Length: 395
Image (cartoon, rainbow, N blue to C red):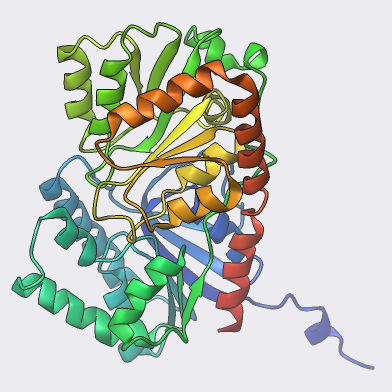
């Protein structure tokens, strides 16, 4: 009699440990996609849920929350996160490590675990350190911390099975740490679920009714209010348009700049500006769909180091994209390719004012740009998350 036990037994999946202190919507999609290949254990501090819940198969390991209010708070939260995560992960069975660039030393611990336990590791780099903090002015390129960090990049990055990043610009910056080699780097643009984030008629939009925005032309910023985001230019624009009562500036989010922005709104008595907290998951698709114009900002010098994921959400919602960033960036490439908005230099408030006024009057032009924006979003779908998961599984 043939024993069929082995053929009927459920195949035990390999175990993947995913480490990301601040899990954003794209990370949620990646974690979910990895569940089709691995037994996924997620170590995290905070989660930003916008539209997609976690897959029920994920094993959650909650650690301390990411603190982004100040540099010191951020540093302390990173230390606490590592202190409660790495000792546990070191002795846990694992076949693959998937490490996201928060906390920013994740890449190096992937290298250490690879040396100690021969565990494969993949990196998802939304941004690059120490480049970001050098550009921020926190430190200099010649500072010993920067030089050591750069050295660690140069020995760790080549050891990664895969390095995923979101633009050719970022890939080129990463390759500098690998003597120009791109063999393990994969450029996978950010994405959104265009079935869940989509245009909503204003008369049917609960966010519009809740905040009394019906009949208003909405200019929206929705996302992190951090050092790399040029929100000061947007405040200047709002001040210049204080007499345009049909135009409302809605700023949604949190971060180290939020308190400063709230203070400026108060001091300048900007009655045309609303500053709101991050919206709950059920309200997020409605809030983003209320934007006629969606603002995406990058402070001068950060053009090659970040591609804000809010760009793709705003496009999916049909917003016209206004990018406040220097030229030769991924943002400029997207806007130019899909003809879905405009780019402005940081500080050029007058040019932004003129284009807002033009679009608020010219409905045909606004509708065309909005349609182009929505069509562009359909090029950046959840398939990108699946591609990352498949690449990891075959690494």
